[in-house]
Amino acid sequence: MLTSDIKAVLFDLDGTLIDSAPDLGAAADEMRTDRGMASIPLDRYRPMAGAGARGMLGVAFDITPDAMEFLTLREEFFVKYENRMLRNTLAFDGVPELIAALTFRGIPWGVVTNKSARFTGPLTGAMPLFATAGAVVSGDTTPFSKPHPEPLFEAARRLGVDPAACVYVGDDERDIVAGRAAGMWTVAATYGYMGAQADVTLWQADATISFPMALLALLKRANKA
Image (cartoon, rainbow, N blue to C red; front, side, top):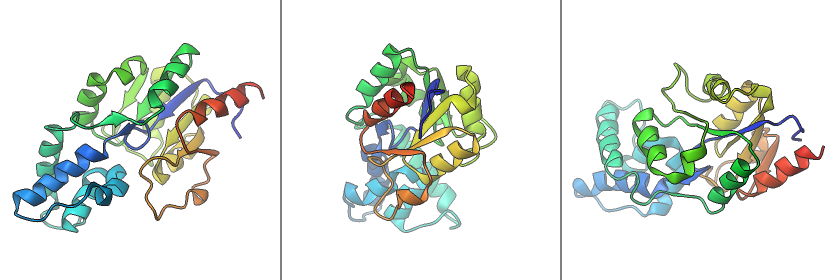
């Protein structure tokens, strides 16, 4: 149950604020077609989009990070994704309205993602959605990445808000684990990339939302508590 002590909202990026699956999947699929392999439909890539290169290469080549050729394939994937990452990536329906409502109410907000700054910087810099973000913390901003809480602590420091007064919203179990470890209120976004196998009830999030603007309703109820 959210409380009236909430002062800021932090979000995961891919699968929570933006739908980057079309560009992530296309980058991996291009690697297949470059090799004369058949194209794979986007709906095969989409559930694994939250796992980044690991997920995309797993779908495209049935490969895991411990494979000898993984690092070489990963860099090839990074280059292809870098060349197209703004082509078909959009905010999820309702996200611009949610961010506008937070900004109108003077509620600071930011992003904490495991995506590296190599991609996060250009992406958030090019999308007007992020103009009012008070913090953007990438996977390599601190020595740790989620599910470690340090990136969330860093975002809270940048916003000047106590972690206990923050909500963290994400579509992956590691987001909830990181948020809980940071002492934040956690919200699972079920409209993201969690995939068919995910059981969000096991994540122990404080709340779940099935569409972005539902977060605003949670915050409104909290402010009346």
